[in-house]
Amino acid sequence: MAESETIDQLIDLANQVVQKTLQYFEGPGAQSSARVDRWGVWEVAAHMLFWHRATTEAALAVGQGGPALYHTISVDAINEDAVGKTAGSTLADIVAQLKQSHQELIKAIRALPNPDAVLMYRADGSAPTGKDRMRTIARHWTGHLEALQAAAGP
Image (tube, rainbow, N blue to C red):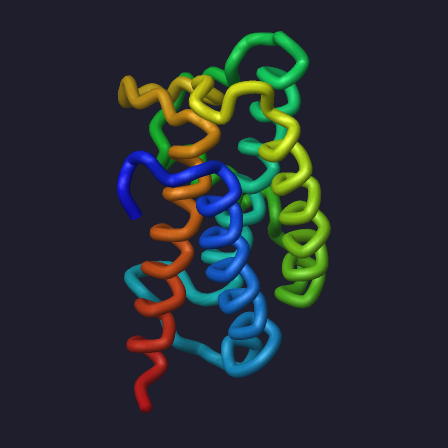
């Protein structure tokens, strides 16, 4: 999609990818021992849950006129922390939380008065907007899903 797509188009795209990924997590992914680098299905799902929640929190804050979310550590460090904080949860628990979190995220993004507003600032200097986050979710989740499927083999 081009930079000119609407927030509704981006939400629809992200939603399609999220639904496809959740189906994988509940289906073949639930039994998969495939790993991509150090992460398997559980770790990928845990990290996705963190970013969905962070994006929702940021969208709610910005939508109510508050400041964008600031991350002062690297995305890699955030991801490791997110996975660690989810320890003890089953994949089914994480998927259930992702389903709820996804609905909350969509509602928060739709409620943004300006989907081009910056939602968060990252330690690397990036400053994604609501539209950027929807693009990233669609692209990033697709990448993780394809990598896990490829690692699992035929």
